[in-house]
Length: 427
Image 1 (cartoon, one colour):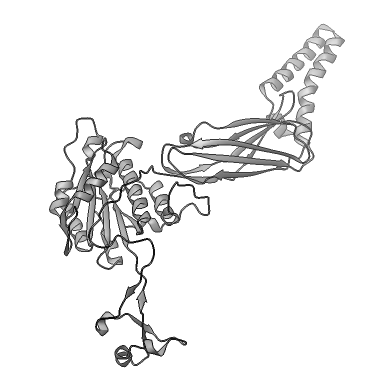
Image 2: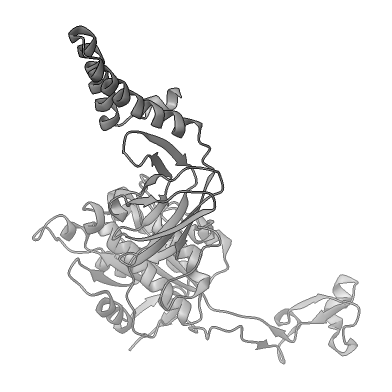
């Protein structure tokens, strides 16, 4: 009852005050009829509060978001399914779902006719132009009477995540240089010729054909070793995204960081469609694409490969890093070779050793260098780090705030540069 009285609305409190005033005036003026009216007016909100306070609402909520992962600018649909299995009188439900402000205004609904076995479904849309991971919920429910005298609050603490990935553009195919571009399938590599050192072998297993026994290796190890006639092979690519605070300019969605994130996402999808196994590393040296994402939600990225989902989820929540140097510890996790595509911001001479080390560990080093000063103002651009990267052995092209990424990507394909231990000539 105490909770019900605390839920009196302005109208309910006005009825209570008016009824009390009428009773006091009736006693002072000696008007019995006015006393009965005052008692009736006071009894109405109190009786309503008593009925609602003793009612047992057994409300259940199931919230689903479809899809749970979308590209920035695309809408997602939120479905609310409410049921009531308790015995309650007819009333009114006032629903308000809490959503982050970037997804839009908080949706509010009014539902009536509450009773035993009551079921309702409500749907609304959310959309964000900002990448990130957002929690939809909790839901607050206010149960009111038909007269609007009392409202009781309830809350469902359950929330559902929504991941908004950066915008991407379709990139044209270019000659990446420095080795094969991959086909998307694991292709066999035969070892019909070569010395013992060129043959990949493994331990003998029961059932292996004895004709595959590699006798030189068996004699050297003292155990039977068999040849691997074919070895699965797939092109690999690493995307390096410079997310250091000192490397970027601007604020919000108009910052150079957002342009870098969008470029990295576009390159990741492009390389994945060309058959590359793609991973993402940041300035901290972390393999961000190995992080856990949103779980088993539905996938709704247009023309996207499911294998890039962890990478795109990592890009959705990527933030600026306060470190001052590029960490290249991730180079020790892979053998020499492969493709590296870097999306870089502002650089200085202290970054030279790290950049040259990356070139030494890759067969093709490509870079998109952002002219980050151009994001500070319309006439603030002083040039990108592309020339500095070229002197360090990279094939690099600049990217400004008004440049089209697909055009810059084509320019990167036409750039000729000697990198690593071999020459990558691109026409």
